[in-house]
Length: 212
View 1 (cartoon, rainbow, N blue to C red):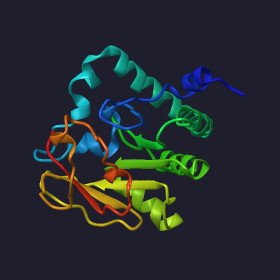
View 2: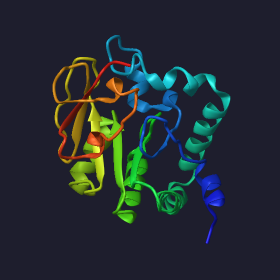
View 3: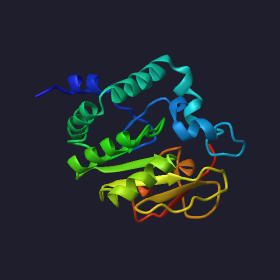
View 4: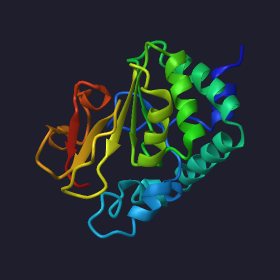
């Protein structure tokens, strides 16, 4: 059996955002497919992307780790998924079993999304949250496969500040600054999730975040 250290090396490590209850997996935000286009659109939710500010861009170790993770997953997604299944299972053995995909970055392709689905199927006791703006990839998957695993909450993000998103079957939504839906409480409690797990719950159809 591989050690946690060996598995960590195989995937490039996990992110551990301070505001969140569990681990995440961050890749470079500059490599977002839809996000790279939305960043150029005034008033879009990507035009002030938090993952292109602060430690995400100014701390060399963070940038290096994100780039390494992206290179690993693009090189061999099957091997990456196998290692992620083993590593997440081991890392969450004695912790709350919640995991967020991409505190920085987004899914890169249909194959990437399918690998994430495979990981969720292999770890049914872990609640996964996948925020994404890759609308075409998600629609393509749903058209062919019908739905996502019960433990994988795909939360599709509205493209514009103050705007909404057309519903996609088997997904839920998030918005920025609409004043509707479930209001994210993190920014009233020191920037942390605290006891809130709304983003991981399919029963919460829309989460509204303040602009940050």
